[in-house]
Length: 386
Image (cartoon, rainbow, N blue to C red; front, side, top):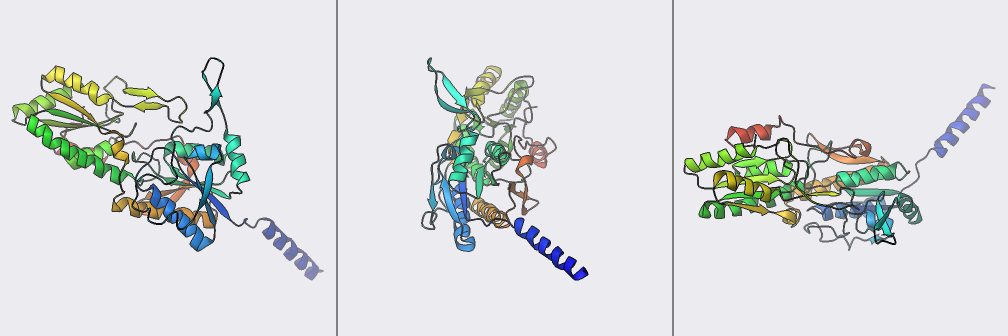
């Protein structure tokens, strides 16, 4: 009798194990969402090569971020497709930062006003129609917020962090940031020489939205005299007095690195425009021009504003970003192989790991006021605007 019970138990254990065995992964989709940045192609390259060579998995490249999922635009990626793209900037798949699946323009009404709809169900249909087993979403906070919505609809997702803003939660670094810092630093260096020659106050406006990482790093690297970040509201009187004090000491020029999201004490950020069909509709920009006028009025010194703009996103990735992007992509494929769905690849304390995408969606990593770089800047006499 005991033997019969043992045989029966073994039968049910095997049946339970078979019913819970993971489905094999045969095809994955890869997209790049949000703004482009150096290093995207490096991730696409390693994911495609490792998937094909090591796992025997087919890879579909989704065109133009979530827009490709909405419109069912995707194509198979081969080894030839991803050959020699490691050093290329941008993304071979294209991207879009205006395709919000929950607020997507599907047409216009009789008065010509846009009609917006939630097309998430359409994305889920296309995901299943293409027989995808997983979506690898490469992007920043907006892309991960969109990924979390798909996860809630049952779509397995692996996230890879990308943004020149370096503002994604739970990762110490995002690829693309280091190259953007290098580009911004070189630009400020070039402005340095003309500021010195013409004895001007030069404001250099950098990207970063609500986070000041890019401005803080490039400002310190270039020796900016004033660094203004969103986390520290500025006082224009303090900035003006700093410029005048430099002038009185014989320093006839001043470099001001200012983040696009910087704002005065008790004031608001400068909004360039609103893109209503975007997951992140507020487009900041123009703070340098506003500040230039105010500082000129306070100091009576010649002042100019420079907006670096999208040059910060472009160009070939530097070596650090190529290695980091490759490491992130390799980890993403490991998570696919283990079917550790709905996690974001992250870098923490020098080690590449993972956190649930749910912990990242809808959040931004800002510069802590006690950060050592702020203390470092103040120690050499850099004005932080306060």
